[in-house]
Length: 182
Image (cartoon, rainbow, N blue to C red; front, side):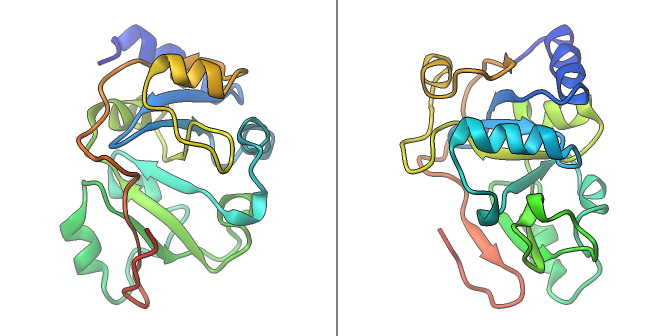
């Protein structure tokens, strides 16, 4: 896992609008401040991903998601039982949520991660972060630091560490419908 110094440096880079790569439950993810539109648009350019697809937010605890999602809605028991853990949920978005986070939808994809490096980055940054696989859109996600460097040149920092035990990105479930998207 990254040292406290590396985590503080990564948090500073995020504060300054940078993009940081970090191991997650299955693949390396690119993270940035979700409320910094320039940082999010830069992350999307690195990935060559359209903004209307929406992005995932990760957090080290559910309170970090409060500015983005309505957390007092029906069905939240299942969400709370699965967190922290490797399940991403589509939750009702807070009114006025910036379009670049959720692609203008009325839901937002959220996960309280139990994966130590990703949770440590959220704690160091003091907030929920965007987490999107480190790859160009439609290409295989990075599963090593070398693959991050090759597939996402221009990333401002890279936290090295072990990936979680998942072979595929986390499942995404819709709280309202129960549907699983991946």
